[in-house]
Amino acid sequence: MAKEAKKTIRCKMNFPQKIVGQPVMHKLWHDFMVVSNTMRGRITEKGAFLEVELTGTAKNLEKALKFLAEQGVGVSGHP
Picture 1 (cartoon, one colour):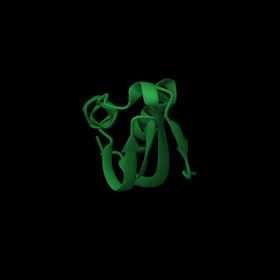
Picture 2 (cartoon, one colour; picture 1 turned 180 degrees about the horizontal axis):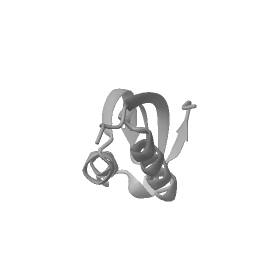
Picture 3 (spheres, one colour; picture 1 turned 45 degrees about the vertical axis):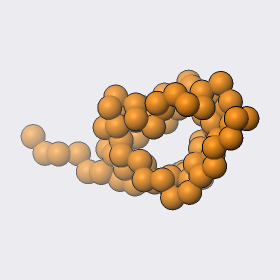
Picture 4 (cartoon, one colour; picture 1 turned 30 degrees about the horizontal axis):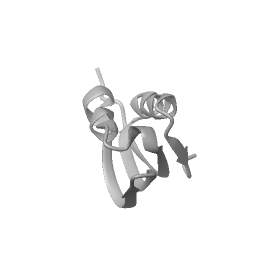
């Protein structure tokens, strides 16, 4: 069985205040095998934003983006 090709997307994530401090980025790897590379970001008590590169299979990236949306994380800038 051939391995699925990996792809990388670059996006901006906006985290609502209610989930700041939760292990959202860890879950991307642990639950979806999507690696995140943080380019820049800002975290405050009122929320957070991160500019990241996400790398994984197309299927896993899709699942990870769905998870982020379910958590209330706004994701923009990806195809």
